[in-house]
Length: 136
Image 1: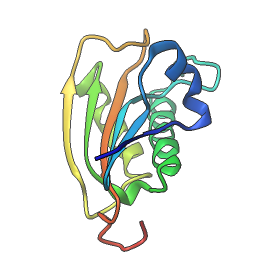
Image 2: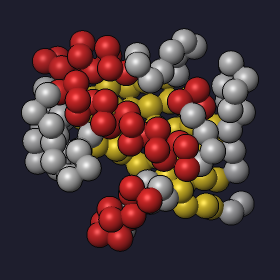
Image 3: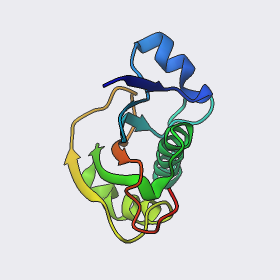
Image 4: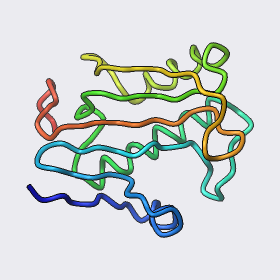
């Protein structure tokens, strides 16, 4: 089975510098690497909600480049620095992007992420044709 790299223009720098694909498609399955909520200039926002929104927007850019949307998500894993401190804010922002029927989710507390100061990284698995709403 062939493997296709999903590479939005916004991810080209990380792809070249760190040698990982933002997303990989194998058949109908699309696996996204972890997305962090930096600004366009690569900084972590001071506001946690803005960072979380940026991370979900980064997820959306990779999904869009794969021809999918948020409804195609079947599972996601989130890695949090300060999990309990920021979980309610994260969930509120998440609900701006994902609605019922809810995908599977695992939230993991960690001591640090690859970008200093980052509070969250979102890893996603999506599947073409997985939407129960019928729009992917």
